[in-house]
Length: 272
Image 1: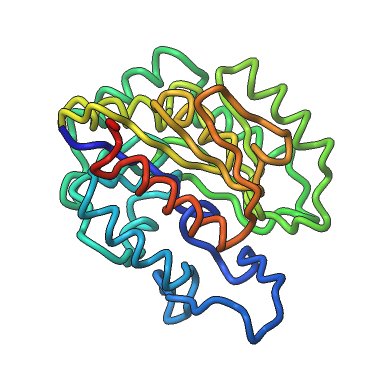
Image 2 (image 1 turned 60 degrees about the horizontal axis):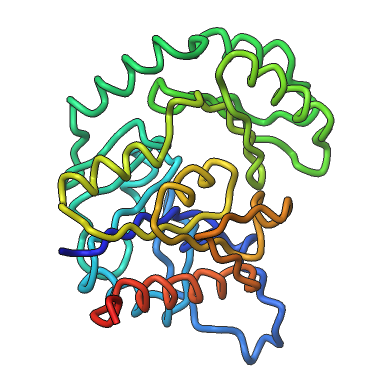
């Protein structure tokens, strides 16, 4: 049976220019491949070596991009290698099959949310009322499932984020700060549940996962093996678990290292 690899994308496998963390001399910087263009501008990158590793991984395992991005945001990414049959978007709210959302899965998720946590409208209203216009640049709703703010990070009041997390916790929601975005996500909306469903459909006998943020923690815990880079929310809090390996690499080179680890774990010798 195949191994299933469920990996987060942003700041795990692909990186914006601001997140590359190229600390080496310019002449020794890795060659980069642009994998996302938005409004005619290059947006996300991986190293050329990582691109080849991802191609090899797609030939070896069931690779499932697993992202908090909306369907529209995900579909503008052009990853190297075989086109994934399955993708998980909106933090588990959608399972895409050949690029199309599975309606039965989405209906199951939305029913669970209505039963187990406060409604999106209540969270939206709180964010609009409580967030300071001085540092908020955009209010956004993702696929009618969760909300997020785009902020000026240098002006952001970090204590406000902590207070928001407490407020959200009492209503069955989780808060995650990732770069310039503050996410408010219902607790029942998880990448891990969607990963388990794809594993069931594909018959995978081994699940591997990678991610960098608080919203990836449940995915890493649900997988047989997991990896996190040396940057991001999880690294900032020294988060780890018995089956999760914390890597020292940061930035785009962490993406390369993660793919090497995933390919080795998913490869033909994994039962040796």
